[in-house]
Length: 272
Length: 326
Image (cartoon, rainbow over all chains, first blue to last red):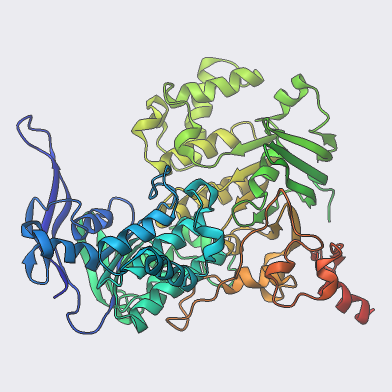
C-alpha cells in the first residue's frame, strides 16, 4: 500500500474553552492500489474536506484520530532515510500557482535543489539536464523559464513548472489539489495530459482533487465523492459518474454545463 | 434587429506600463438588443473584463479609454459629464462585479448598501417605501428579507453574490454588466446563481453583458457569444450557430478543449500562450498558435467578415471562403 488513510478524523475547535467542535473530516479511509499506478479523484465542493484530506496525505496535518500510512508505516513515526524517501515519493501540486513559489528565488532553484538533495543528479549539470527534460514534458522551453523569477511567469507557466517539478522527482504518488482550476482552458488539457501520461507510462499514482466531474471522468480510474467531511459515494469512475447513486453526486453532475448549448439547462434549475 | 439598447463602437483601452502601452482593448464593436444576453468569452488577459468595465467608464489609471463610443439608448457613456455619468451608473447601466467577496462594504449592513444606492439616485423616497423595496429585491434573488440586517461577513459567497445581483437590478437598469459573476462560487451554487440572474434579468427586461472564461457555461447561458482574443472580438454570433459552425480556429479550439463526458484519457488543448499586449505579433494576433495559418496571417490583420444572421468573424480563411462563395 503506497499511501493509505485509516479511519482518519480531523476536528477543529473544541478544547478547554468548549467551543463547538467542527469535524473537517469524519472517519475517512482510502488506500491507493499497491500494484499498478492508478488515479483516484476526490470530488466535492468547498467545505467538503477534500483539501484537509490532501493535507493529511502530504503530512502537513496530523489526524485527530485515525492514521496516515506510507508503505504500511505511520507517517508521523518516520525518521531519517524513511522520511526522506516519503518526501521524495509523494509530491504535491497545489491549486494556486501564485502562492506556491518563493518570490525571492529564481525558479531554477525549485528544480535544481531537490534534484541534488534527493540524489537524482550527481552534479549541477546533471540536475540542469533533468530540469530541462521535465520542462519539455509540460511544454515549457527551458530558455524561457530557467533564470526567471516567479513574477515574470504567467499563472499557466507556473502551474506547469509545479507539474514539471513533481514529475522530475519520479515520485510514487502525486497529490494534486485542483491543479487546473486557476488555469486557462487552452492550458488545462496540457496539464491534465501530462498527469495522465505519468500514470500511464511513469507508474505514478495520482490523487486528483477537484470539484469538476468532467475532468475527473477524463482522468480518474476511481472516484470518491465527499460532502461535509464524509465520503458519500465511491467506486469505479464509470459507475460513480455513469450511474450515480447518491443525490449529491447527481446534483454535482447536473451542475456541469452541457457540452452543446442548451437554453433549458438553467430554467430547469430555477424551477427546482 | 430592433434598435440596440447598447452600441459599442471602436472601443480602445490602453494601460501605461513601465515597458510601454499595453493595448488591452484594441477596437471592439458590438450591439446588444433589448433583453439579450451577450457572453464575452476569453482567456485571462484577453481584454474581456477591461471591455466590460469600460462600458461603465470604470477604467482607472494607469488604464485609459483611448477611443470609441458606448451608446446607451443613444447616449454616449464615454462622453457624458460627471453628473450625468453618476445618474447613468446604477440606474440605466449596472455592474455585477467579479468576486462578490470584496464587492460589498464590510462595515455596512446589507440594507445600508441599498440605501447608499437609493440616496445617490434620490429614489425611492421614504423609509417605508425603501424597506419594502429592499425586501422585495432580496426576495426576488431568493434571499429572505431579514438578510438586510446582516453584514457581508455573515453571508456565504453565494448569498453575497445574490445581494450584488439585487443591487444591480434595484433601479431596473436597461443594461446589466456581469463580470465573471460566479467564478468564485462552487459549481452547484454557480448554477443556482446564474439561474437567478437570468430570471431577474428577464423579469425587468434588461439586456445583459456577461464576461466569462468558461465557454461551456456561456453556451447554455448566453443568447449570443463574442469570443475575445488580444483585445478584439474574433468571432461573434448566436450561441447555437457559433457552437455548431465555429469559423475562427480559436473558437474551434476553445470548444474542443471543453472537458466532456466523452472518451476517457483524451485531452485536447491549444498550444502556445496568449500574446503579449505590449508587443502583439504582427498580422493576426492568433497566427503563432493557429494550426491553419497562411503566409498572409503573419503580415496583415484580418478584417471582419460578415457571415449572415449576425454571425461575424475575423479570419483570413473565412474571408477567402466568403469571397469564393460570392
